[in-house]
Length: 426
Image 1: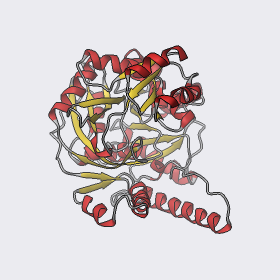
Image 2 (image 1 turned 90 degrees about the horizontal axis):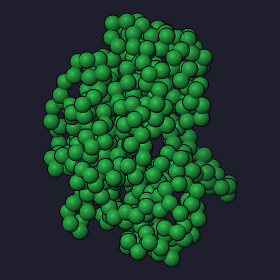
Image 3 (image 1 turned 120 degrees about the vertical axis):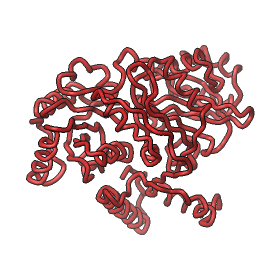
């Protein structure tokens, strides 16, 4: 058995794991890689409610997925820090399983490792997404953009910057404000704790570039105008022939933080032309698996312009499940040779991440940017929360306790005149 420590009492953990292994003898299990937050929880719940035995893996003992009634949790090595230790762990786990498990990575540092090592893991795991030849193109934002051009998918105006010598040419091609976006995004996000860096004016370009000049090729890109509610998503699962078995479209309504953040409130809206554009791009990339293609609707001409492609589930994919498009289950069944096509989504339903939306709305209200009435007016149609679930209450309860402890600590620091530590994930 893998050497990782269980997340809670060893006896209870062993009993839960044995029950999962017993069920796995008749029903192929799923392994969710990195189950710390809403993304992993959505996969666990979407599969677990359908009767799939689920093992949740994470490098952190604080992973909320460990508390789900639909999974048993196990600590694992961090794939981003020690790839070989992570692979050895999976091999050891695989040898314990009575049959091959379908694997679902939720973050780039896990999906890239698995994609590069499919042949090594194949004796124990079924991988329902592309191998590295295709995934390499998804990992490269420049290749995403060039594929979009070949597929006639609209994009923001973009100039590629490989050295300081390119700055003057690039600046002449765009209007400001603009952003620097990395071609290789994972290392950039880990370094700057954000996906892009904003450049307010041409005069700031040199100074901002000094911070990123060692990050390889960069994209200097125009900022498409519009608020959070102009950011649209196409979520889908494509089979090995890049044929869609499940498609969902929706949009963000509010982000955390605003402008360049992640969703805290989103809704289901079916937009056929958006789905068509995303599928053209994914076919051009010869993609197989679950993905999110994000667009922004440009108010200047009404076009949907590509923001990025994520070759995995995204934060609020559970809304698709709540609307009848269970991407995880479609991928799972296709991986087992039992493909089916998901129905057309139910529209008008909304997803909320209350642990982010409520504090953010309070701060925005105090700044005069919104009001309790306008916030309340936005809520009808809300069917699902990223953490809270009556059928699976413990992850939400744990998150609430952690949030309360964090707020109490901040209050004590303020009362004592100490520095307030930056926000941390629940």
